[in-house]
Amino acid sequence: MERAVSLTLNEASYVVEQSSTAINRAVDRGVIKAKLQRRGKVRLRKVGPAELRFLAISGEVERKLTPAGRREVYEAMRRLSTDAHRLEIGVMTFQLVEVDRRIAGRLKRLEEVKTLIDERPNAEPVLRGTDVAVYEIAALARGQTVAEIVEDYPGLTPAQVDAASEYAKVYPKAGRPLPGRSLKRMLSDMAASGVWDVDGDGEPIEPRQIP
Image (cartoon, rainbow, N blue to C red; front, side, top):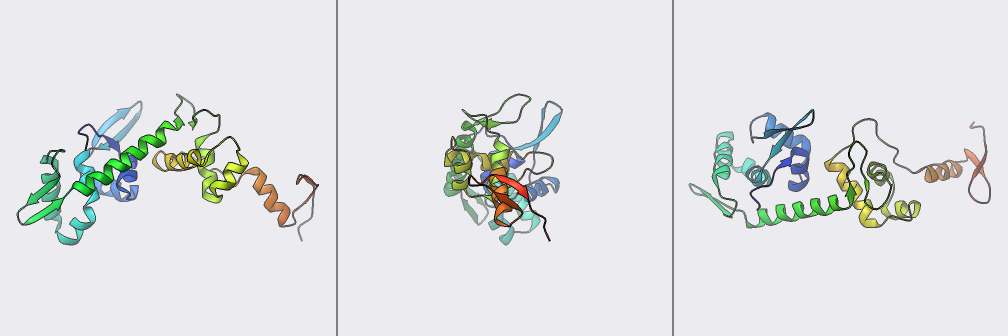
């Protein structure tokens, strides 16, 4: 694993595939340590390779050890070289080859996702090569299939839709949630429910009174 890895808690959540709530709680309770880094006016908590490794085996550690034992494992993990793939503490041995492989795979996927996103200064991110807002597509992915989204946005590929959804999980948008259905599909749903009369092209022409 790379020594220079430094991730926000949301990024760490994505990489080790655990909830961000659980990882924030682990930092708050002192189970793992995080470094503070300032980005403009925002202070971010970041973790490195030792924390990622520990979080990846935390399920096994919690089942087998007391809180004191967990702290001992974590401190030993912090001292362990990133080139070493085996941790021994007394009679306990933790094999880290598969752990490091999974972490490396998720880090690679995160980088792949970010290459499909254009992060613009002082503006919301868009899918690279388009003017389509990432968070708009991510919101639609909660209520529509990938095939439906691509049908509504013919210029997009399934890979871009997936990237938007994953990016929004790691870097969530603050504020009120965006609609989970496109305008076209909401109008279609309303027509199907009898709220609207539609013409031959599927365009609403006159609202009906709902009993």
